[in-house]
Length: 143
Image (cartoon, rainbow, N blue to C red; front, side, top):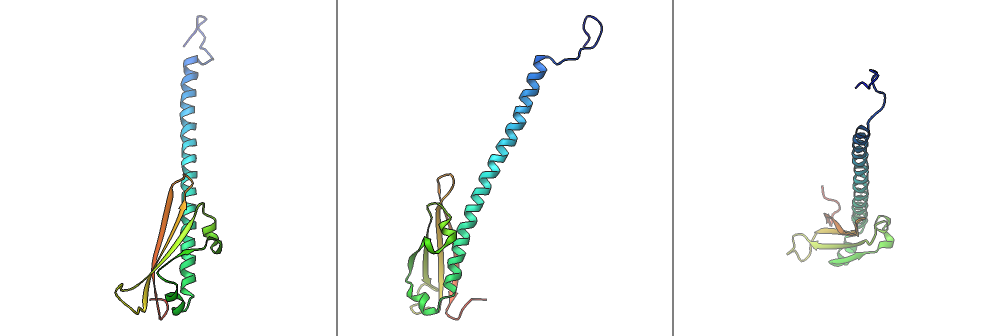
């Protein structure tokens, strides 16, 4: 626009400045929200990874046992938190191992199903559980 002298103006109006401020606020708000959501996703993935690592550690530990030691453990027992560093890193965590014969009707099994459940309190206060199921044979690892 031209002013009364016929020269073009050099300044922004208040309305133009306000529109620019609103647009910048929306952009920065979106970037902040995206960063916040990314942080929460990473935290959740880290917790889940630790829970899976804790379960895998227990499964590998069971696979080092002799067959008599595996069958002597009983059908269900709790995982001590102090003996598993990944489990101790999780807030409010606990672990349970369930061992059942496979097939279930077998009285003297040569194969067992192992179910390892790791429960923990997530960063948002909800309880979550990760489960790994595998089989261990009297002859060793299954191929």
